[in-house]
Image (tube, rainbow, N blue to C red):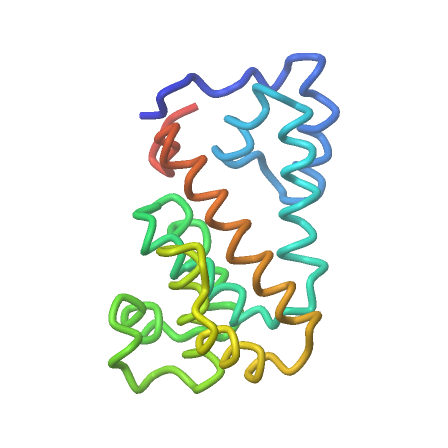
Length: 175
């Protein structure tokens, strides 16, 4: 159970953003139900994560591998629950999802995916990225734009998992 009650979605201050979230995403997930205690924070969060997930040119399979790897490293099951179906739709195989914990010894990942996963691990576990890891991901991505979008994605989903876990937001919570 979450450490705080979920926000009142009918509160006048939250209502316009609730309507926007429903229009964009179909429903108000637990993450946003918690964020809506502060509509200003929830609005900024929604804009940022929409840019990461829907406006970025980072390929969807790489984006979802990153999100699933961050969730695994940070022990964030809500994030994994939400993104596993998306990862499968974006072309990540179930075998790859199952092998993420041991990606370094798995033959299921391409060179590009391995570079992205090494970069994700470095950013998530150590913050500072070794030069060799950066050089490999830069070569694998092929453009500065994709390196920036990849970096922003790793950073964003570390933010998401830390928020979720600090407040113990989980998929099985009841509103």
